[in-house]
Amino acid sequence: MGQTTSTTAAVPRRRDRSKHRPTTVTSPLRAKADDSLLESLGSGDRKQCSLVCRRWLLVDGQSRHRLSLNAHSDLALVIPSIFSRFDAVTKLALKCDRRSASIDDDALILISLRCRNLTRLKLRSCRELTDFGINAVLDNCSLLEELSVKRLRGLTDGAAAEPIGPGVASSSLKTICLKEILNGQCFGPLIIGSKNLRTLKLFRCSGDWDKLLEVIANRVTGMVEIHLERLQISDIGLSAISNCLSLEILHLVKTPECTNLGLKSVAENCKLLRKLHIDGWKTNRIGDDGLTAVAKNCPNLQELVLIGVNPTKSSIEILGINCQNLERLALCGSDTVGDAEISCIAVKCVALKKLCIKNCPVSDHGMEALAGGCPNLVKVKVKKCRGVTCEGADWLRASRGSLVVNLDTGELEHQEASVTASDSGVQDNGLEMPPVAAQRWAANAASTRTGRSKSFKARLGLIAGKNLVACTFRSWSSFSGRSRNR
Image (tube, rainbow, N blue to C red; front, top):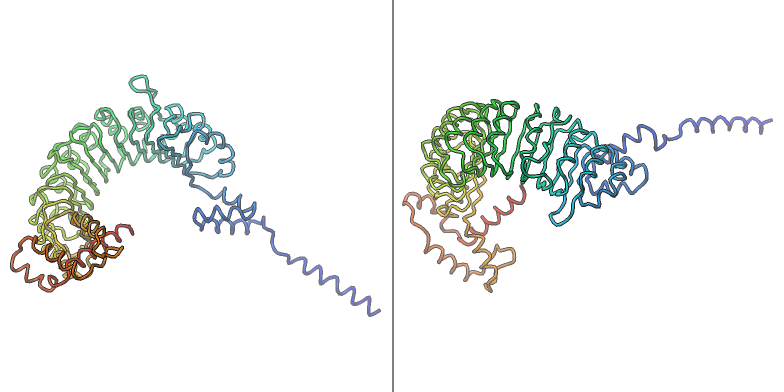
């Protein structure tokens, strides 16, 4: 009797344990955990984890939204298997090297049918593609927001070329970038038809763009960012761009036919301009007049980069007075930016945080002016300005302890290489030198040092006694390290 009772009592305990078995690996909770785990890993780690089990292989494919593929012609054979596994891709880059045959239109059409949820597509050096393949993407990918095409050689030259676009993607496109396209104007219908376009970037695309820009600016008025580099464009094109009243960012790089007149037109109409980059290619066609117009009409300007442009104190002073939000300023390759202009910046540009001066006739006196001006300045980069010495940069650092000063005189790299290659015993890292060699090198450097005012020499008294060689190599090492960390 007692034996029967004990046996009966044991059965319910086994049933109770069965009710609390752990959830299976295919449960929604476990699936969500797997997704979160793989999404937190880098690309290399995810590849390794996808080999653990079939579940993780599946999750890896379903959770990858970015994919970059080598677009050789052989890729066409594996397109079905690739996009069967990675069926959630929204950002795709197809890149081919210059020496290899790329995928053709048939492969791109197949991709567009497999990836209808694409929001970003980058095509680079896919020379076998033509307008037929590009149009297939625009017709099949209705969610496309960004299209970037570089080195597309398959377009027919002249009037026989088929227009590209607009397609169903035109309503969603926000960014179009065209680089090194011989007949880039074939994309005209696409650009004109993209009513919601916000960013247009055109780099080294042949043909006269003035007339097309007139049509684009009349139809697409909501653009906020325009980049034009090495294009055949004149003041006519700039005047057309001025119709984009919402424009905030403008890059004009090596467009020699653009002058002060075109820049004035942009400044007077695009009053929301925040970032302006101009590479004047030393043609002297854009200068004080154009910059003064920008200063008077664009009070929201935060970033100004001038390369090969020759502004003077007059335009810089107006910029400092009117553009109270100017935080980043770069002056490169200018023959007119000297100590007077830097002193003006120090006094007038009170909001300035970052200043870059490259290949300008600036000296230590300019550094002296910066020490007492620009109260919000956090970083100064000086490169290839022969008048600025190591002592001047060190004195600026000492005067403003929190200020980051990067100095590269342009001669340091040559000096470091020559000294390292010699038998003087310099360490491999270029930071130490035997005392005798160091003294000889420092003496030669001191003998060629340019004269300075007595007051400035007095302020540099404490620094002048330091070892010049150690100072030089320390500055070079500091500059290189910070450049790599960017």
